[in-house]
Image (tube, rainbow, N blue to C red; front, side):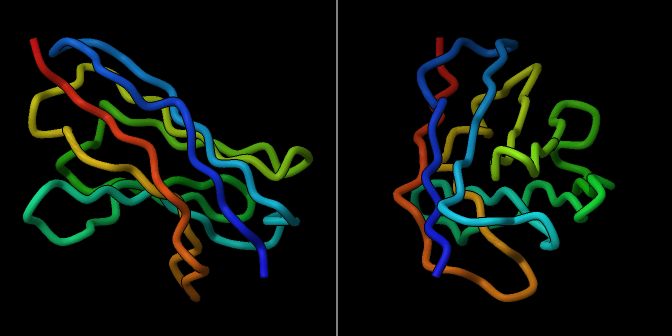
Length: 113
């Protein structure tokens, strides 16, 4: 099974930016891929998806601030996050929405002054 490794999180001030990466151990070329997040005490939520060709989807909570992209040649998914808010604080994960793979360890994003 393809394994997923997220990276790029950190501590950032409100209004700041981060770029997350998700490295897959095998090809993701033909899959819809997505980014999820889970805040303490809350359910995991989907924050972005990209079709195999890269067509994005975002829920209203992040639309205009987050950008998902992918490099199929590198088996890597990205999430650029701008104008970060404290409510964006969560552990961020990538996965395949249509048929979930084993979850990676995630990468912590903390937005705080």
